[in-house]
Length: 256
Ligand code: CIR
Image (cartoon, rainbow, N blue to C red; front, side, top):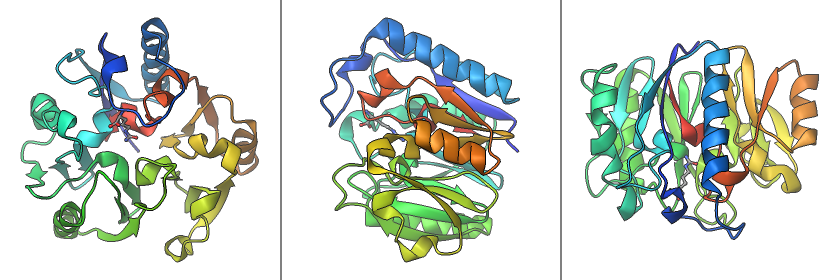
């Protein structure tokens, strides 16, 4: 069960952030409206939401998930792999300290983006990506082991269609992983029930279990139907403007 979330309002320069896709520029009015609805959904799922002001120094800073790994047993502040995002950790530190007084850290040359970290009960999958490097993964695995969690790495560096591990998989509780087709054969996922996401719906593989509900991007009817058929309760959220900047649902909040 989560009780809280931290989010950050997107800045008016949100369109100056990093992106690898070519879906056009985000429309700020829609960004704000989609973000507002996302926050409202977190509240509907029972969370108390801490909302941070927009930070124009960092156009990608609404993607707060990348700055920390928050667990029931302790927190780790990350060291994001994109140079333009490094300062986001200092910016969010005070908010995290108010809930986790002594977070651990990732030190250079290690880099970790929270989007690469997938918690599945007491095990963490750590994605090796173009943002999370081997040294960062090693430091994080050691911190997690200290908290009593196991972890393993999944290398997604050769997958050109995803930015982070969690762009392609999500753990939604009840021993169930939502997995994009391209990754579903990975032996690492053997122990889980899998919900496959077809190639044309792969953006929706990034979904988020929040208490009794699963937040899912709107516009992906097959995955939504599969979730419902398996007894999950999807909440559909418009994500078009965040998708234009390579962002998924999970990256818009830190949940704990
Ligand atoms: C970036 O490239 O860093 C941002 N434009 C998107 C980050 C998305 N974060 C995530 O999926 N966890």
